[in-house]
Length: 322
Image (cartoon, rainbow, N blue to C red; front, side, top):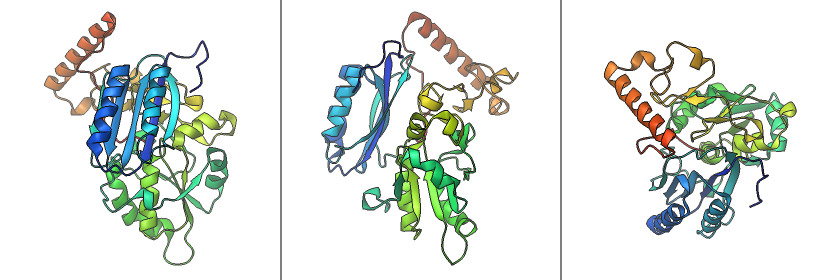
């Protein structure tokens, strides 16, 4: 791992995933948790029989040691890692969890190791999605799409990645037509992991011409210059940065602590926005008791921040990552 420039933000953030086959998940999880906690690394890593996924943050040396350890795990020598930086630690604690899936689709027979769509490098993505014969699908959740996406991409409007298979099966004929030559389908997500599963799913459904953005939106924003970009808006990320833009610079969105949804600068000027309590999306759905609880939590978090310590009750967005 290269040393950061002297004026770079001090915290290294690593988003990583790898589909692999772990015969003993706990034998993978426990040493990884001890290593991360011992190094002062924070974030969330999910470990399942199908592989590993998550985002962690810490100093450069600590992150390098964790990544080196992950590369020693079975099938993980080529783990996909995207590095960025944050001005402050974007997580409150370290969690290494044993899960059924590292990204939940709810289709147990889908195995990305048995075959996925064609990878498309970030620098080649514009040409693919600019072709009018290509159908472009954003596989992320509705609250992510709302703050940014590629020009012309289809928004499934799903609240969870688990909803994607039912959406595609219901919309397949409208999207791909009946009979004849099927169009190309290009899909993308934040870091690439959801597209590993969604393209494997489409292949299992008999769709042949399936493509996905290698490294996801994060790799595209890191690689493609803004003046050449077809991305519009910001990219939601699953930590307290909330969103990033081109060059993976911090975005302008905040997170509503009432409903865990991203809040734009415009939303924050609304009389319905109360920091730490509510936003225009949830203000009408929260009781006075809930508001009082959120306000007290925000007060405690503010006091903890003033003391320079993490508030033990603080949380980040608990949603599908990748």
